[in-house]
Image 1: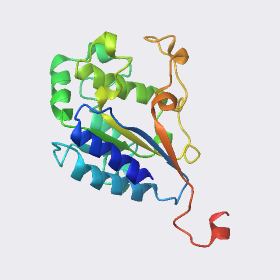
Image 2: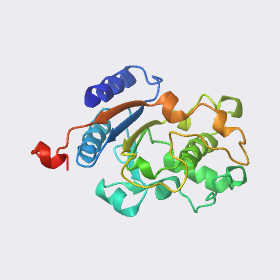
Image 3: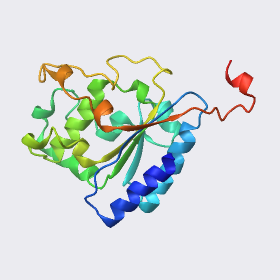
Image 4: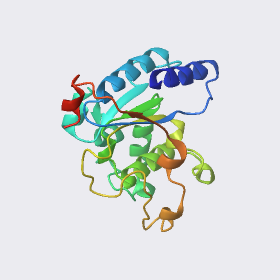
Amino acid sequence: SIFWHVLNWVRHKKIKPDHFPLHLGIIGGAGTGKSKVINVLYNLLKRELPDADPDTACMKISFTGMASANIDGRTWHSFLGLGQGHGKIDGLKDMKAVSKASTRDRLKSVQMIIEDEISLESSQMDNYMNDLLNHVFEVPTHGRGATLYNNISIIKVGDFMQLNLFGTPIYENVSSSEDPYGKLRHNRWRSHFKCFELTQCMRLKEEHFANI
């Protein structure tokens, strides 16, 4: 059903380019086939996204070097260019113009981002990616509450029970010095992401071993 859900969305996108962005969550324990699903969806989207640059239209990212290598992707930090003039979560207003233009040029053809190991993504990190994409593509300030990730589609994959997170998980809001009422706002994960759960262990055929 995940495949058909994404295929149905991308077919609508081809007919109507301004079709709403896809916000999809895929949750599953170890061995339930998350990496396989990522590769299947990645190949589908590379082929089906309208006017797609095959190298940049769909990007796979994760939050450690090993995790990104496992999906043949990039790290979250490398993809967003942290350390290239905008390394602080609350420092976007001080981002240099040349860094802003460079980031915009580098990400302008991205239509879809697939994130793996989202148990390692804090709410602060999700806020940063959302704010960075809206900032560098100059989404009007008054419209940023309704525009998520500059309307780039996002698929988040992982297992919230698998890895310990340093920070607040993405399904909880967090306040900051720039947004002291952040905890009171709508949570992006809860409000905008349609979630699927993978429950069948694909590594072991013997059910009593899988349940150990």
